[in-house]
Length: 385
Ligand SMILES: Cc1ncc(COP(=O)(O)O)c(C=O)c1O
Image (cartoon, rainbow, N blue to C red; front, side, top):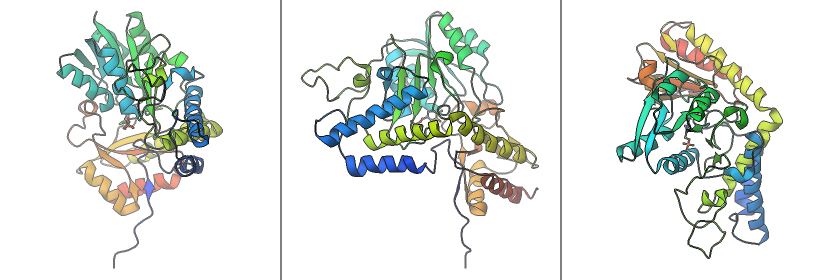
């Protein structure tokens, strides 16, 4: 008779956080079960409430970004969509763009697509063995026709934090723009746009902001225009074939996912109650402890970045990362991700191009027991301890 499987220990929070705080699930359920109307379209009570939910999500994101104007915060369906909107609009007329080898494919693929179509020329600057990009590389890659640099603030593979403010200084001194993919940063590190120097910032609601799938965010600095990649109904100026002027309307065509917006607002509310610094410190503490203990096991190579996001990438000598991921679940119920993690270029710099890495990522509701379970499972696999 097979034994009882070990309880689920979820360490794939960089993909999507789980479990969600109860407030988030309550907010999602209330919107789905009791509100059940779309936002910005009608005048009956539930429709007005749906609109208020969207307004609360917008306001929460504006607070999260350090008190920006909510009118500059669009809430598209996800981070990938938000990045595509920004990159296609800002580069639609051509020119040169810079990305980094540590970026996620949500940035790299639209840029590569534009390059393949002959719309832009693209330079991808290298990173070091932990995924860190040197500002000098960006300065060296800059050309007269460079329009923007796109950068993932925190790598989803190693957790390394890029020097965005310094990158922005280089870009702005040369008259360029900075598009920041903050999917792995928001909710983990305090993010004050005034200090960051970004012109555009995109992120997902379902990761460290603890919301669900279906809501992303796109902040665009005042004075910069983003043309809508998607055109359609907004519930406003419906008698015109032109997209309306306000940025939020222009970038939110189509029916919004109101439950996801409710979850996003509640997730940010939960983070505000707990304190983002406290939450981030706790998650990073678990990741650092895990990294240190894994590194002490013979045959294990850890690629975690010091002081980075709560992500530990590692390899186990003699094992394919995909097999390690299966084994740790079988042995200890630990769920991790393996492979290249939707980051096409970083692995050649990490020395992990063949099979990628095993990635454990720690969320606010993980505990020391989860670290113990993963470390114990790796000891079992390697025979070390
Ligand atoms: C750094 C980074 N950027 C962008 C994304 C894309 O997010 P989504 O798939 O929610 O659009 C991810 C998701 O893994 C990510 O880690």
